[in-house]
Image 1 (cartoon, protein in one colour):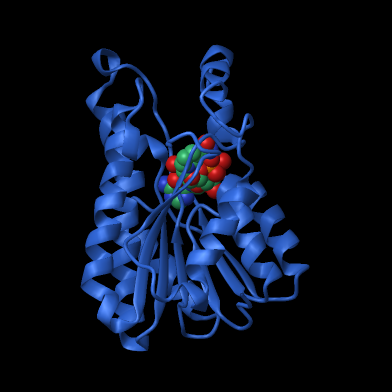
Image 2: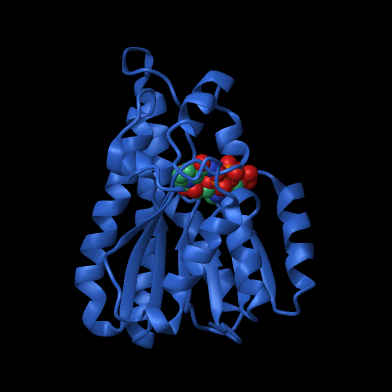
Length: 247
Ligand code: NAP
């Protein structure tokens, strides 16, 4: 699964799952452009670590919920060699609370980043990938988008939307040698899951057949598989990386 000289774009690559994805590609020889929205220090640290693998690395401050900023991210990534072989739409946020307490603002913010942000990047990438007649797109969904979860109505809606977009784009672009798949992580050990209360964590852990939380690297391995030439006949799929939680 070598990615030598391929250009890989990852949204939200400065921390957590996105960072593990960037590292996995950089280790396989890819040039990596990743975005982040605010944590410049974490982004610089990640970029420094990635450069140690020898490829070209770009860290771009770009809020996925804003189309103009996504355009800048794509323009900068183009300087790595002109191609975009792989796009990983990973950036995501939560604003959890029960429906009765959920404000319209918290609903819209999560949809803007998770769903609209993915739409922006898919639109920009499809133009480039159609010209190349090659592309691998991997969207970060969640088992919450398949199963729902109390307190996460906004997040569940956004991730169910991401799955719908994945399947639609897969059908639109399959004949052009572009595959589009989604990874649906369960409970992964990052700062996002660290926000959960201890009791919610304990309850969730009890529902994981593997008996442990996932690692960002577990998710990165699935992303790499979908991005590989070997996965060229797989499109429109959702792969749960959840220790058996959704079974
Ligand atoms: P995380 O540790 O909170 O990292 C989120 C990343 O996204 C950071 O790099 C962050 O950069 C970036 N980001 C946030 N808002 C952004 C925006 N508007 N524009 C661009 N970048 C933005 O989260 P994670 O746990 O790694 O989650 C990554 C993805 O996996 C998300 O889509 C999440 O929904 C999904 N997921 C996670 C879990 C889990 O248990 N952790 C489970 C299922 C699915 P800044 O720090 O600069 O904001």
